[in-house]
Structures are given as C-alpha cells and as structure tokens.
Length: 90
Image 1 (tube, one colour):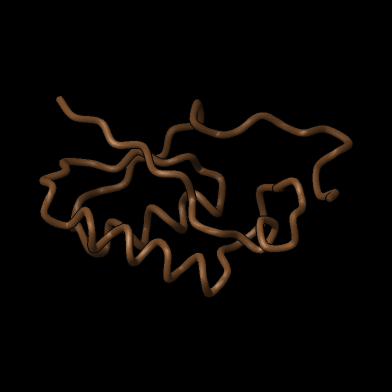
Image 2 (image 1 turned 60 degrees about the horizontal axis):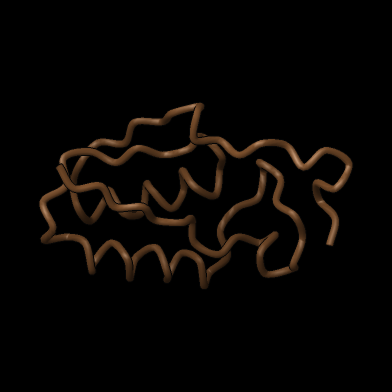
C-alpha cells in the first residue's frame, strides 16, 4: 500500500499570513497549484482520496480528483484543531 500526503494549496489566509479558519477558500494561485499537483499524480494509480472537511483542503482534493478520477472521502479526524483566540489573526 502506498500513501501520499498532500498539503492543501494556497488559501486566502495563507496569502495574507493569517492563521487559517475553516471558511477560507483557495487563491487563484492555489487553484493553479492544485491543478499542477493533480497532473503530476494522474498516472500514479490512486484508488481514493481522503480529505479533511476543512474548505481549503476539500477544494484542493476536488481539483485533484477531477483529474485523477477517483472518489473523495472526507474524514473529520483529518480536520485541524482550533487555534482558539488566535484564529483569523496574523
């Protein structure tokens, strides 16, 4: 069994250097990054993609799975922990 870990692509929070919150979406650059990764992985023979339900991770997974043509399974255990009062701050 081979497992490949992929970090989510650049989000708006990443670009602004803000600690992420769940509702952030990918930047245009992040969409390009996800597409680039997808094309690099398309011939690697994946069966499924496991994704955090966090928006930026799930958006990245959706872009990748459109190219590699496998289902996404979301898993709550992959969701990051809260940053508490630091969430949404630089």
